[in-house]
Amino acid sequence: MAVLQKSNSSGTPPCAAGADLEAEIVEYFVSFVQLLGLPKSVGQIYGVLFASTDSLVMDDIIERLGISKGSASQGLSLLRSLGAVTSHSVEGDRRERFAADLNVSRIVHHFFEERLMPRLEHGQARVESMLSGLDPSSNEEQQVLYDRIKALRKWQKRGNAIVPRIVRWLRR
Image: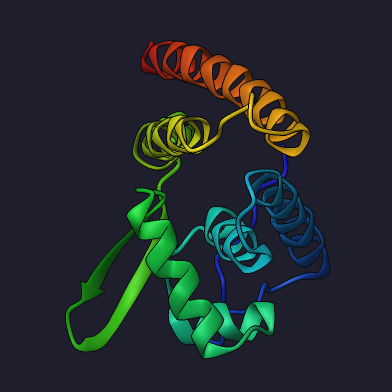
């Protein structure tokens, strides 16, 4: 099993093999976060932190990934809110250092419970509100919209049923 060597002070990998492995890890997490509808930079940041054996300051992350300071700041903030990144400081250095939380199950659980479930609950209320505002007997257009939103309600109910099961499974 290949292990990345510690980064040098500039935050760049010390050898080509380390750079190749880091790039592969970053791409893995990019594809994962894009599946969840999150920005590419979030996957890049988590990937570089996951691949690093040392915690990194924001400047190291920016340099390694070639992203803007704004993207790095927003990505780190989102990752923190998901519980995917921790931060700390080192005595004698005022800069904040970041590290990946390696408990991926907890991160996914947090995403489902804190992000997805509230949106599903809000979505259910919106679907019901849309249905209550329609009179399918008034005209054909209202009937078509009513049928479509009823189909949407069916998928909403399926999501409401499956997501809590996924959350329980992740708690194991």
